[in-house]
Length: 216
Image (cartoon, rainbow, N blue to C red; front, side, top):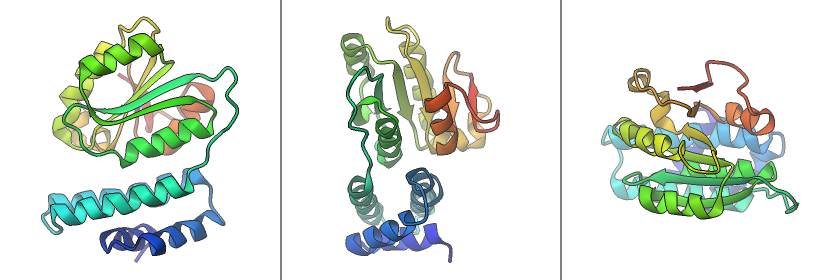
């Protein structure tokens, strides 16, 4: 059994303290980026797959998500320098209930010094655009977990490409790793398929390779 599978089992069992100890031990020899990309993301993907296959209940999926949320919040790093920070607005579109990936993305932007407004999942487009008009973010990052969210992600991304501050629009989540995403073209959006590519984009404004990050 690999590390992410062991951790997902702790999530499913509701073992908050054991899961936190497991993650803290992992961080003794790994970075937070590795935590997000190599441990937490695969663990939650497995839980999502188990739910889709009806091998776990909705209640079990919610419990696992809550424990992962606890662990993520308990281990998050924050950059405390507040001068001249760029701004990132992070959320899930209306109808999208998954949020753990969004929290990992928000944590990575904070670690890199961004002023972050994490709006959570299920944010209506009108409300999101209103906030963007007032706050003028440099980056808008949104995420979807399931394939049927892809058209909604496209609608949101295209709407944000017209915001006055001209933010970079990033799209990620499990949905963009699915084969059904290949035929969806989103003009001007940056598609982020894994967290290492996101870190590279935050630091350099471009992806580490064409397989993990691309523009529509």
